[in-house]
Image (cartoon, rainbow, N blue to C red; front, side, top):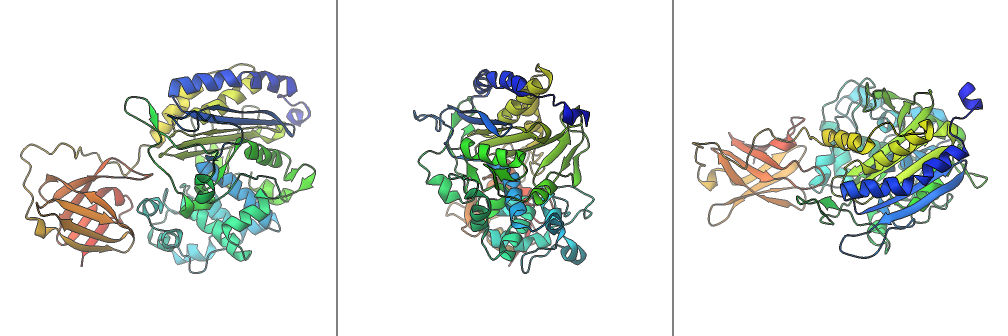
Length: 485
């Protein structure tokens, strides 16, 4: 109560913290090379800072402004939990068993008991990022959600694993129960009533916007290029939202005002408040040495004064990185949108801002810390320890190409085909399109190819044995072996 009666972050302190933002953003853009950034700060229901920095696209002159549309990646999750909070009739409805017709998990008992809250807080038992590799191969949402039933499960409600498609399954189920599509439910429940006129859950809205920030990745020489396009429609509730600093500032105001905006009730206070409650431990010790929890679409933690801190980051390896951080008690929040692959800039801007706002000084180099955390997080478990680019001395020769060609099947990843060119060179085809990957011989019956997509891990191995084909990076959960037909 002492903290509540005597807020530590008043208007004068916020003004000083805001005054540093231009310099902070410019310095971090210089250090990282990230092309474009957009920042909004809300305090006491007012937008006290909103500004764009840098370029929408390298090689062009158009600058980023407050109304430039960015892909916000997993910052979509707290936006989507706001949508669901607006669609529910009470906080207990989060604990209802709302599932898509036919949706199931590997354990029938879990299927019968899993709730919206379980899937929104990543405690269903699904493995980390389950289904993401199917998305990379081009499978649609319906196929991916149907095949989650084959994923191995960790203990239900006792383990945390970040899962885009578990989250998506729950959001789509809520929309279906309301007789709507997810896109329409989002627009009708949140975007339209909140005046978020440039916000959408559909990739087409982003790619067709004349004022959009192209996604960029870093080149080996340190420059940045818009080399990839990321279509996240399959996981729209978990990662498919695009928005602007202007619209996200309106959403921040709604969050910090308990579901009201401009005097109008948009989301029930009780269903929204439930999203801010810890549901499961996500990190026993996070990057700043405290315990982190996950709520319903939110990272939940507590600062040194015991105040609730809500945050979420978004990251596409193909070129986007975002962050939102709020102290609800102080009615203070910041959102940082960028058009560069994750190097920690948006998290660092937010951490630096709140460090100064709460303590009057900055205690550490937050960019270095955030960059290190991202580098560690992006060490994919599917990345091989074998250097497939350099075959071993005395490598055994491959057999004739006919020993490998044919059609192979897998209950999770579908069909794979191996074909041979006239010169014997092999190509592996995967996915519904399909995607074609030239195979390079490594040793004996083992080949390799360069992975592609959001979850690319560099070169991965392909091993043929006894009428089977095993793709190493697809086999993290022991689902990556195909059987010849």
